[in-house]
Each structure stands twice: as C-alpha cells, then as structure tokens.
Amino acid sequence: MNASFPPLMASCLRRCPPLAAVLSFLAGLPEIAFAAQGQVDDTDPLPLTVVNSLAPVVDLFGGNPWLQGMAAIIVTFTAASLVTWLVFRLVRRVTTRTRIEIDDRIALMLRPPVYYTLLVSGISYGLYLMPLGENVETIAIRCVRTVGIAVWVNFFSGLASLLLTRLALLTNKYSFLQRRTLTLFDNAAKILIFAVGLYAIFVIWKIDMTAWLASAGIVGIAVGFAAKDTLSNLFSGVFIVADAPYKVGDYIVLDGNTRGKVISIGLRSTRILTRDDVEITIPNSIIGNTTIINQSGGPSEKLRIRLKVGVAYGTDTDRVRSILLAIVANEPLICKSPEPRVRFRSFGPSSLDFELLCWIHHPEIRGRAMDALNDAVYKSFTREGIEIPYSKQDLYIRGLPEFLSRVDAIQPGQVSRRISDEPSSKN
Image (cartoon, rainbow, N blue to C red; front, side, top):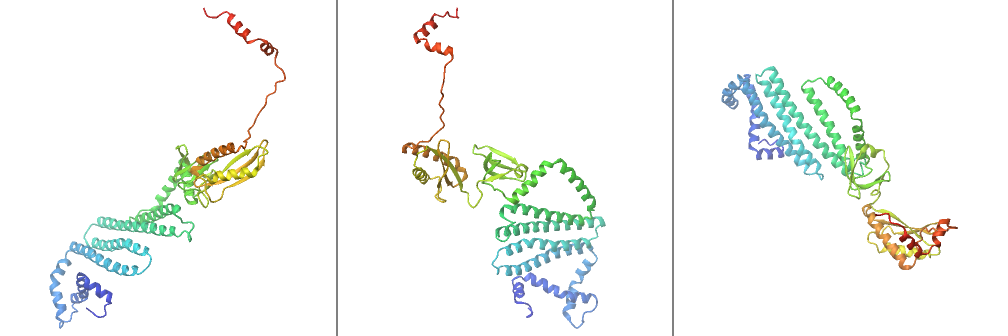
C-alpha cells in the first residue's frame, strides 16, 4: 500500500478487500487506455500483460451496445454501494464526536437519496448506451429521474419534520413555533416540498405549466364561491391552531352560555363535552367570532368560585367571617393556596351581604364544590343561630265582599244540612 494514503483510507481498504481490488483495477485503467492508443512502453511487461488479457473482453463489449449499457448499470450499482458506504462511514466518524443527536439522524436519512442519485446517474447513462428507440429511451430516462425526485421529496419531508420538531422544543427562542402549532407548520412545509417536487416532475416530463395554472385559477374561484362556509371554517381552524385560545382538555364558556370540556380541535370544527355528557360540535367560524372564556387558562388550572351569603341585620360580622373561613378550611375540594377570603360587599334591603372567595383545583369540580359549601354554610348558620333572611310579604284585607260576609255568618252545621237537603242530579 502506498505510504501517501491517509491512515483512515488505508484502514478502510484493509477492512474491505473488494474495494482495494476495484481501486487497483481503476489504477490500471490509464495504462489500458494508453495501450488502446498504442502509447504503451514495450519495455514494460505489466501493461502489455493487462492489455492482452483484457483484449477479448474489450472486443466483446466494444461491438455490443446492449452489453455496454448493462455493464454501466451493474458498475453503477457496485460503485454507488462502495462510494455510499465509504462516504457515510467517514460522516459517521464525524457525527459521533458531536454532542447533539440530530446530525446522526440527518446523516442516516441522507444516505438513501444519495445512493439513489448515484444509481439514477448510472442507469440513465446505461439506457443512453443501449440501442433503444428514441421514445422508449426518453420515457425510461424520465421514469428513472421521476423516481429520484420522489426519493428526494421523501427525504426533505422527513428533514422538515425533524427540524420543526427540534425547533418546537426551543420554545424560549422561537415563540411562534410551539408544540400546539407544530402540526400546522409541518403540514405547510410538506405541502410546499410536494409542490416543488411536482413542479420538478412536470419539468422532467416537459409539461407546460401555463395551462395547468390557468385551470387551477378558474377551479379555485369556483370552489371558493361554492365552499365559502367550508373555507371560512378551515381558515378559522388554522387561526385557532396558531393563536391557541384554548387546547384539548380546557374548560371553556362560549357567549356566557355553553360550557364544556374541549375534546377535539379540528380544522373545520371544535367539539366540547358538557357536564351533561352531551357532545356539541361548533363550527370554527362561529368560535372565531365569539367571546371565549377559558376557565382553564392563565398561570394554572385553578378556578376561583364565589359564594354569596346574606345574614340578618344585627349579626356579628366577625363571627360570620370566622365561620365561613372555618368551613372552607375543612373542605377538601378547596385549595389552601391562594388563601380563601371573605368580603363584606354591601348592605342589602333585608340582609348584610357577604361573599366567600376561594379556589378549586380544576373547573370540572365547580358544581361539587358549590354544593358542598352551600350545604356546610346552611348547617353551620343553623347550628350557630345565625339567621339567613329571605323575602316575606304580609297581606292586609280591609274589608270582605257582601257574599263572603254572609257565608261567614252561616254555622258549619247549617252548611252541611243545606248541602244534604239539595236534590241530587242523579236519577
């Protein structure tokens, strides 16, 4: 082995004897070419021996273009395998020294398209050497190149998904690209890559894009008018995914009326599940024009609930506060932090109006928490003798009508006797 070879190349050749044989053969090709041109030194016996041994093979391939084309394709398979193996072995040596994993995955993904690109080049040259008809040769070469385009489109689609996923994890640096918007950007990147690949295929097959673009414009206008509502829902769904006013699992209130848990966010509609276990499907165009209250939003999913309580005038307010705070302190559904608080809101028409403010862990348990607090407040106030006032109405009658006065003067016995003396209407 020549001492000028790099150590890494020498190691690869020692581990792969077929590669060393091929390189040795290729090293002798200039001598063969010179011999074919009559430029070989007659005093050197090695080139003459090689030329004489390969003369029948050269004569066989020289007069048969079919064999030349097949030989070119076979050599392409061999050379593509060897070159790909050697190059990516060197690349792997480099990527394994880095701390990140993404370069290893990119190198692994890049190997198939590079291999197929080398094959496409050799197969195209082999088809060119074969005595095929002009139309057959053109169609075959275009088919091979179309397959190559498809391989590269697949590679770039995977690369885009890999890079976008990596960027989505870096939420501190790229706020516009997050996990909830990853699907949107991933689909947009794949559509763009597919469009570029389709354009390249059209160029390979020499298809005029002008007529296609004109037809697409007319079809787009027709579809826009026919599917106006569907497109409105689609664009609203894209904005909902990008803006993310809510996510799956959040409790939302629409127009202060419909309340439920978000179970699905699609491009056309959003589905929520109410507390009655009723699934409601709402078009995204309606949600886009509606005020949305996200009870699960904010720094945490905790929700503050308000319990209004009225007590009679003359009640000790400090005593009311201590009772209410003791109730929430013993209730397991109520959060300890933030601390519950009691507010004396106003002097009502017939009561002193208090409001108990406390937090629950999740909006889903709001109904149970309110039920537990109402029950505990009523029992505690009853036990402590605190009156909960309610509206009362007294009716004063100044005088009775004349017929009611006569009825009032009749004794009960006389009424029963008169009823029994009346003739029966039955036969």
